[in-house]
Length: 391
Image (cartoon, rainbow, N blue to C red):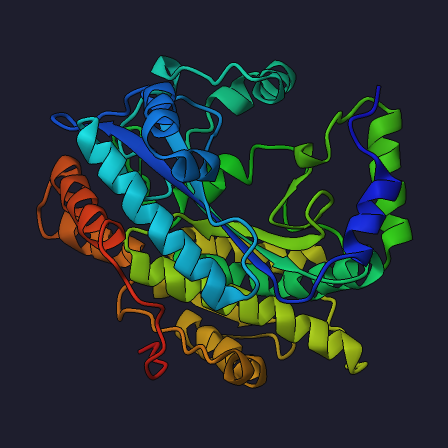
């Protein structure tokens, strides 16, 4: 029996409101002493249910019991979603402290052995593990997902099409996972290599052009037994059929609330600017997938330290210049939303790589990151509204 109702999905987009925002942030649950992953999700979830019912409805499991997700719910706009998320972050970190665990926020845990992790035993995750086997069990990763409401299913698909070429830039900016299985991977986002390059139906999607085309694609996957749920289509940007949103899924989890907030603001602005460009009939730039993949690799390998290809001119330029272009392009929408995302001079991958190059051990680098995460996410952090800076 199909778990996807495609007609209901189309109705969800027909009833959607442009610019509503939902935020999902994934954290590693850590033993306080060793900073090893520890399977404490059920305990945290049960304690929340007993002491903070609102928090309990905002947290969710992920693939492993050593991971917890915090969700804003549907905010009326980006400011509302961030306000909701800030409140839930504080309560989650307070709960973690009371239960004697730490929460980590990098794209990967630096030394965890995937073979020691326990999977969540829900029907959904059993289907994932049964279907993907090693690929699923190996996936101990943490990311940031942003949902933006877009009215009309055809329009949502076209917005996804427009976002395809921007995904490597967003990844480069968010890169925050250099350590994996006890090693310096040499990559800025080893999470993306582990997850996006391993899972099926993942990474940069094709351009579908219309809801009918995307509908046909899902129908084929269903008819051939390739999927049972629409969430088994793991593209880095996708129409979310239940929520009537465009979901951007390319970014690593961020180590500070300030960086996460800035990324959320930029992603929302990119989605809404794409919708505006579509409404105004501006031509869509659709480079071949192979060229977007070339930039995706550059983002995985070098992140914000490297160069990305300007796919229109065919020339390389610093990744920071691509960030500036996103800010300039989204300026009209950002002005209306009243947001000016501020990013630090060095992102997570650059900071961790610099500390490691100076002689800090992987464990010391991670301990410093975990402390920074606790201080930042556990505090009351305002939405970034100061002058834009990417230098």
